[in-house]
Each structure stands twice: as structure tokens, then as C-alpha cells.
Image 1: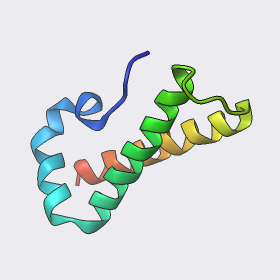
Image 2 (image 1 turned 45 degrees about the vertical axis):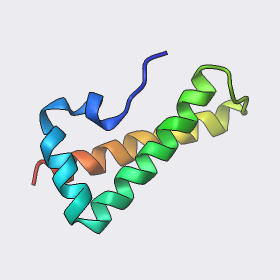
Image 3 (image 1 turned 45 degrees about the horizontal axis):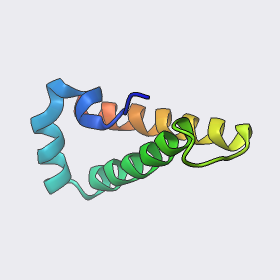
Length: 76
């Protein structure tokens, strides 16, 4: 299953991601949370972790919310 890390999601913003991670504490928190949730979603998608569908749906919704928030920071 395909991974959805931020560098692959926003390749055109690779430099800005690195800059914001280093200079913006809130962005760095969002980045770390996104990475953590993306890793868990990947574990679910590959069958490494087994959870109820409702929890998987909640995690995927959280991942999309974080992605949207990060995207808004990248386009400021």
C-alpha cells in the first residue's frame, strides 16, 4: 500500500517543510503528529495492526485534517 508522508504529498513544498519544521514550533508539532498518525494508518492498511473499522475511519479523518492544516501553513 502506498505511503502518504508529507514529502510525497507535497513535493513542491519540500524546502518550505524543512524550513517550517526548524522555525515554527506549531508546524513541527503538526508534522510530527501527521507522521505518527500516517504510520499507524499504514500499519492498519498493511494488516500489521488490526482495529475496528470505526477507529480506522477516525484515524484516516484525523490524517486528512492534519494534512489540510499543514497545507494551509505551506501556502501562507
